[in-house]
Image (cartoon, rainbow, N blue to C red; front, side):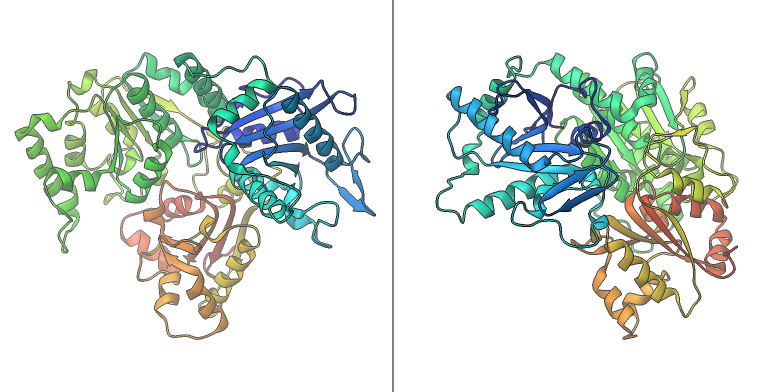
Length: 580
């Protein structure tokens, strides 16, 4: 995450500032950024005291000065602003930023640091309002640009907004001969000079204490009440994080793996059954440590056996018995392959009824498993890959394999809107077992149930996606189906010969699993464990229910997995037999 100064919101910070702080703190891939919160301006150019809500210094790009606002209503008329719920409703936020920018330049010039070509952009961030709420016209005129305004939805992608503001600022002023700005002047050394000058107590050179303090701050904010769970690792070698969808189990598992690898220098295996979930775990760890191997179990077994792929006619016996037994024989013949000092297994319920696979995974440690740290994460409601409805619960399996394992229940929702959880719980049995919600209930979104029939489902899918594209990028939307790649609605549309406007449009929008700038579609089982901003679930009809139940699985469990993938919007296209 960026270097946050201070490491937590300053006392007295208002709601908009706290929301922005959490947003910036959640950026995982900009460690060279500096974010300063609540910077008091004692040397204001107007001779008055002032404050910069946020100042973001971006190497290679420039500086953004931010004024955070959370009004319920904004009016801009005849060049004058009115923001309700603010101490001075008629105060011009952009003029405030202009004064702050002059003061910043003046201070840096006096300190002998200002080179004169540093890009310094301004941004008013309305954390309580969405861009779509400005329905009458595009905000922006001779006095300011639209890109100098940030919105509530930008809290989800703060880095993208900051970089866009700096890019637009540079593009505009490059056309002005009298103004010389050069983002190349923002070297890492110059970034330090600026931040060190603005806050005299800010020093360079990170220490282990600094890293620990950052981790503690991040964990305290992201995990909140789950913080106790990671403390269990200090005194318990084996821990199972068990909880419903959306409680942050994968995050806890990744943080556990990073602690083992980075802090304790223990070679660690982080694995799961789902290929896409393994990719997600890899992205969560990327760049944070080198001592973690991340791979889905099947790929790991193939690699141990020296195989490039599974046989074309591979069946359950191959995946659940033949391949794991062959891999285990390889490990026994070559003991050096069992070199891990810690194991972290996500979606453990997928492995719980596969004894041969568990035999292999638990044999990969350099020391006896009883003395090796093992962390599991799972949810038996998501056990939709099992071939037997009578399989023992994953917690029971974990206890039989790892006697004394600590069963840590995590029950606070920290991913999906409460309205989505409430909507799903109205008709699924059993319901979510949340004890509370960290996700604010005031954000826009929720769950929608759309009745469809054979003749209307394609049009309903197109309508749902068009509506979602108003608020979300294509890559943030996912279409799911209980069926696989041949029988799902998305698959039928793509291979069909129909030429209706909706079918033609859908073929341009949909991409199988991956495709930049397009909407992805998956089976529910493939997308299990992952999430998306917006999800549309298709094929919720009697045919799908009968097929799921014929395989020995619970229809409610499949729906639970599908409908808990969406963070902000979930749209259910339900056949007539399922509509209440």
